[in-house]
Amino acid sequence: MRLNEDGKQFHLPSFLTQELIASLCKTKVYQVAKEYKILKAQGIMKVESRRVTITDFDKLQQRAEFLKISAGVQKQVL
Image (tube, rainbow, N blue to C red):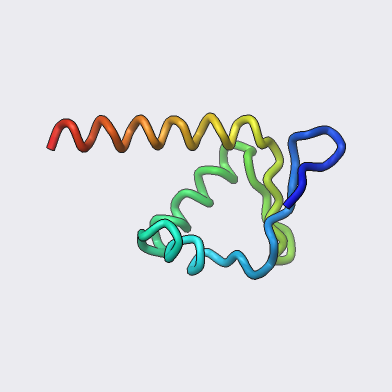
């Protein structure tokens, strides 16, 4: 995967399915699908004809940091 000329967008390879992402992240497919929906709603991702494009890599990184911090807080509460 390589960022395009503007340094913000890239296409996910077609073999990187929601099922594979879930397996790699040790989570459930429905959780990946839920995150896809959030990313699309926030304009971070678009899906056209089964082609997934990350439209804003910076926002994706911010979302990942938010989820990482969120998970850490949940572990501390438990």
